[in-house]
Structures are given as C-alpha cells and as structure tokens.
Length: 451
Image 1 (cartoon, helix red, strand yellow):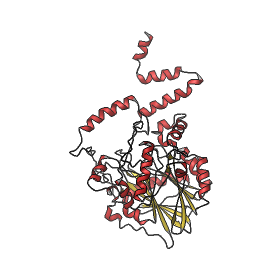
Image 2 (cartoon, one colour; image 1 turned 90 degrees about the vertical axis):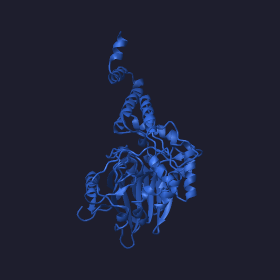
Image 3 (tube, helix red, strand yellow; image 1 turned 135 degrees about the vertical axis):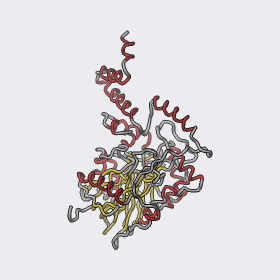
Image 4 (cartoon, helix red, strand yellow; image 1 turned 135 degrees about the horizontal axis):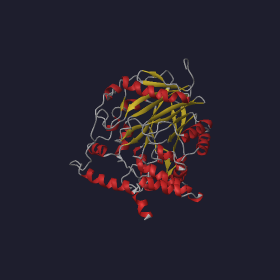
C-alpha cells in the first residue's frame, strides 16, 4: 500500500523525497550526480550523454524529419524569420576602412566554425563550399594573419560516435572554403574533436595537412597536441597555444551550479580526450598546464597567445574557471587570451595591461538555435612588437534569420551600436573600456586619455 501511494506521487516529488531520504555520507556523491542528471535532462543542450526520455523524443522527431526531406535527400530548411537588423552585405563589407597606422599589423580572430548541416551539405553538392564566408572574407583576408576554431572532425572514413548527444562531422571540402576565406591557422582543440572517435582526430589532421592549412591544439600524440604554433607576423614571432576546458561538457548554467559537476567533467574529459604519448587527442587545460606551457613558449617567441575553448553554453557571465586559467596564463607571461565556445560573445577584461577576450561566439556554425544571435570578430593590432589594442566588430549569426541564412554578416548602424553598448557594459566591471567608434569597438591594452 505504501509503495502504491508513493508511486502515485508525481515523479519530480518522488525524486526529491528519495534524495532527501538518502542521508549517509557515502551516498552524497551519487545524490549530487542524480540532481545533476535532472538538471541536464531539463536543459535543451549538452555535450554528452542523454536520458531515455531524450532518446524517445529524438526517435519521434527523427520520423518527422524523415518526412521533411527534399528531393535530394537533404533536410528541408527551417522556417525562417526576417528581422529589422542592419548589416553589411558582402560588397559593403569589402569597402570598410580597415587601415591601421604606419608600422602596425593585425592578427584577426574569430570563434567557432562548424559547417555540418544539411543546408551546408546541399551547398557543397552544388559547388558552394565557400558560402558561409562570403560576407566576411574581405575582413579576414585584410589581416596579416587570421585564426579560427575548427569546431569538430573533418572526416569521410571515421564514423560518428554514438555516445555523444550532439555529434558532428564535416565534409573535407569545407577545409578549402576556410582556407580560401583567408584563414592561416585553425585550432582543433574543442569539445567536439572526439565526435568521430580517435580515428576521426587522425583523419582530421590528415585532411588539414593535405589542404595546407596548419592547425594547433590537437595531435596524434601529446607532444604534437601540446606544441605551440609559431608564426612570424610583420617580423614578430607569435606563439599560439590552444586548449579544451572541461566545462564545455556542461550543458548549461543550472547543471554547472550542481556541486561536483565540473570535477566530474574534468575527470571524464581527461580520460576520453586527453592526448598521451601513444594516443591522439587534445590538451585538457588547467592553470598549472597553461602556466608551464606559456613559460616554455615565451622562450621561443616574442609574443604568446592563448586561444582556449571554454565557458558554459549561452552563459555570458564569465565562468570562474575561465578567469582562473586566463589569469594564470597572463601571470606566466601570455600577451593575449582569446576564447570561444558558448555560441555568443562574452565580456573583455583588462588584466595587468593585457587583454582577455573571453568569448567570440560563433562565426560559421550551423546552429538553428535562436540564442546564437551575436558574435564578434576581433582584429588585434600589433604596434612596437606588442598587442596595442583590439578592434571588435559585432557579427550577426542567427542562422534562421533570412538576413543571415547560414552566412554570418557584420552588424552596422544602430544594430552594431546596441551590441557594442551591451559589450561595454558587461566589460566595464572587468576593467576594460570599450570605446565605440562607428560600427566597431576599441579596447586598449594600456589605459588611454578619458578612461
């Protein structure tokens, strides 16, 4: 009778009663994990795992999707919206004045590139692998050196793993599009690197090698994954380091606040993704790792850039582990930190006269999520062999808007101003002053008059 009455109680209350009833110290860790699973099951995203309920929903939705395939077998594009957002067309973007002072040079950084969707597959089949970059490539090519995050495996032979909730795989022809857009270097250190397993890592590295597009952040073994990429930009040797951070496997802010959530992800990620002397992978970052790596890179280069994949999806406030790693990097001698992952921008910090750009957001990422609306393009200006300032160009990335349609556009006018004003407000408590100049923001490493 008691059991019958208990079963008649709503499921959420039964779970709460069960957790409350388990009081022994030995069960606390399992209780925390149960609470975390509940939080994750209610979230819309995530990087791994999945409940039976989610699997059932996925099965039901997949049958609906099958009914919405076009004559070529591709998924029918999503229902689009049209906003009143102002943006630069490709022709207009090519006319933007991107000149810098005499003796100055630029390094451009963007966020995530993941062109995996059926929309992109269709365009590739039609000979358009460059499509995602058409409206921004003039800015990318204008820089002396350009860097992007390649958010996932590029593979043909390697199969997508079934353990991941949202696994991805890109057509190798995408690499040619990235290179033609003007990128000189891509990071492969991110939470989706392992989506096609270890064979997918090796195949990705091979496709990049064949295309002549250098990468950093992953490798066939630990030595290759941890090795900095050194480029000479206008006579200055710049070392680039890339890492993956454990919280990128946390689905949202609610799950992140559950006790022990980060440590469990850290342990799991190190087990599954960390490169070893005999296993391909990436470097899972912490403050000690970045400290040693920056000190080592500082001996072989004039400037050191740390380019981590970190943060909690769609959570713009900076996660405490991001701050810990960023400060450790600069304390060790890094000259600039530029991050990505959360699918939208994060604030800027000025720390010890160095700039930390916590998040650039998406660049060419085939998400249909309406929250993935805004990103940043960062043009960092070198003067007198140091990073003097950064130009921040707001980017319109909501793919389901007809004005984007899976091709990011640069905001202009009032649309750009609104993004920059929010960025300035979010960055002010972190010591960074965003000066709004037309459709761009400027942040100086050293304080200037009026700050």
